Image 1: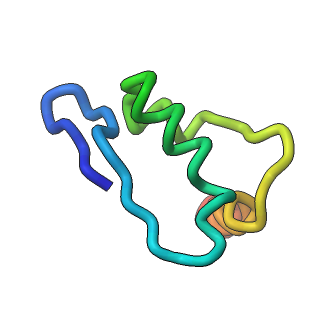
Image 2 (image 1 turned 30 degrees about the vertical axis):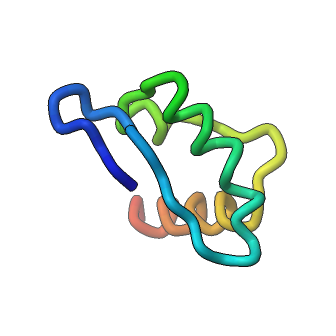
Length: 64
């Protein structure tokens, strides 16, 4: 992931894995919308992918 240090926004993302199709759409929105990284943490997917579920579980564990 390439970030703009001044705006804190995502400039580009590169994926290399057979399962990247689950991540491409959210990365496209982040880049096209110049969304700051702190706002990305607030995004709640309507239909979570396996990777997003894992992140939610890790966040719950971290908050214990």
